[in-house]
Amino acid sequence: MNEPVPLNSGPLLQQLQDDTSGLSNRMLLSLAMAGLRVRLLRSAVTILSVVLAIAFLTYMGIAGSIERNVASSVVELERTFASNSDGDRNTSGTSSVTGALNDARVKHLNHEQAQDDANRMRFLLRRNGTSVETALSGSSTNTWLITMALLTCTVGVWNAMLMSVTERFREIGTMKCLGAVDSMVIKLFLFESAFQGLVGAIAGVILGLVVALTAAVLQFERFGWTRFPVDQLGKVVCMALIVGALLAVIGAAYPAFIAARMKPVDALRTEE
Amino acid sequence: MEQSTSLPMNPSPTIQRDYVVRTLGITRIYHMGSEKTHALRGVDLDIFRGEYMAIMGPSGSGKSTLFNIVGGLDKPTEGMVFVDEVDIAALDSYELAWLRCRKIGYIFQAYNLLPMLTAIENVTMPMTFANVDADDARDRAYDLLQKVGIGHRWSHRPGRMSGGQQQRVAIARALANNPAIVLADEPTANLDLHTGADIIAMLKELTQAAGVTVISATHDHKMLDICDRVVWIRDGQIDRVQRREDLDIHVGQIEEAETSH
Ligand SMILES: Nc1ncnc2c1ncn2[C@@H]1O[C@H](COP(=O)(O)OP(=O)(O)OP(=O)(O)O)[C@@H](O)[C@H]1O
Ligand SMILES: [Mg+2]
Image (cartoon, rainbow over all chains, first blue to last red; front, side, top):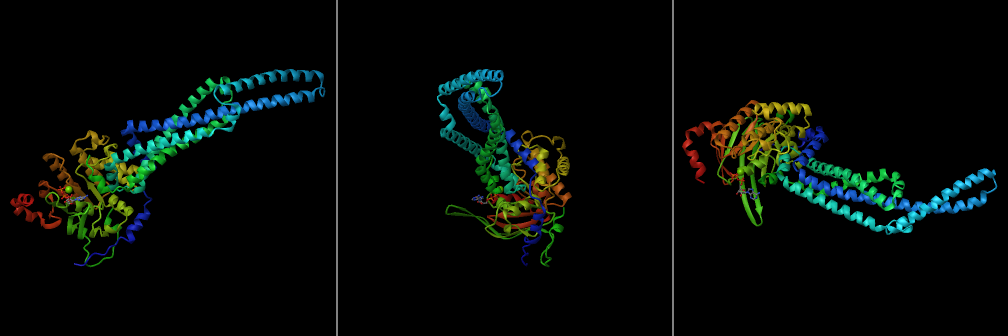
């Protein structure tokens, strides 16, 4: 009997190219969700670690901004105070007498108010163990702390996803038997992790904002409110969300790779 | 979805189109440290399209190894394996995934349903991998569940089903993409006698209706009553291949053949 000719070159490859490879994102999402639902407790713990890290990041960002705002307010008030004194001398007698008098009175009131505010803020800064100068220079220890917190969190996610992968050898193997390609498996785990990261980041941002605002009001009294960095808010929130999702994805990268590289036979051999 | 028309081939006079699986001299050696285990030692096997083939043999004779190789889950150390005229030993992992998805249905001893998905989602999954439209996939999955007799349980998760019910879902899942072959490695080993008989009868009925080839490893003698041919494997080699008609005459020897080793 002659040996059959291998025919894998042409038609099979053709068919492969005709397929737009893979699993819809909707299906991936529902699979990832189902996976999370089943392992609710574990994913809650993973999410919690992201919440804490992102809350810390948000807090540091907002608190630092408030401190800087307060400090720069001091500088600004003292500058206007100085220039106003100059202005008083220069402008007197140039316009109508009553107008000038009125102006001067308002200025004087504002002037006193400004001086009070500036002094109070200087005091509050000192009470919090910092000063106008250090607050403005921005300390590098914060960056360090934040980096460490994020790294710790990434390692936590890594560990959780690794456990999730080993626990699901069978499932992954079965999916591969049913025709899942490696990239699907990778996507699935990244999706799952990114979702946890995002949920954790949203909760973390809220927590971080609440804590930062409370602390600011406690530390800087009404200045904590009035010097709240509204302009920075969007930036900080966006960054926290992106960082949250990103660290979850980074933490899941290696476990997802392991899962994708698994051979289906090995996966099926592991008994439950 | 008829495989043979979608995969045109060079018509060589020696190739019979109704072979769905052909293996040529496959060996499989497992290396464990310095020790070698010859799980298969040169297996030549031809399986016709649409037949129901039982593989029998003592424990450790290499049935699962043969299965994994035919199913594209493992590669032979030597030899060639053709599934629908495609040499699967030469495929890369992406092509193998494609083949597993559309040509092969798997039924496992431990059912292997995905625990977080409902019955219908489990059946839908291979169709999703094959890019079947979501609504069509759902309709077909429901039809299949009806056929295996558990349409009313479509929304249940495997954890809440009996072994027999889970294996029915697994049969529906194996048939989802109209495969050319269904591989069932001891599908009844975890089931009681009666449920096992039901599952085997169902497998026979459904695959016959769809013209699907079934290859099933088993220790279960009920399988012998319904299969077309039996391959006896011993020590990684084919001992003999018998048609059921011939088998009936030697029924007394079956026990003997299985226990003698
Ligand atoms: N992953 C592996 N590594 C090393 N040896 C293996 C491996 N898998 C199987 N073997 C060996 O190959 C031989 C055939 O095993 P196989 O699982 O194919 O037997 P089987 O016929 O399916 O047995 P059973 O009826 O018990 O399922 C055995 O000697 C076994 O020890
Ligand atoms: Mg076996």
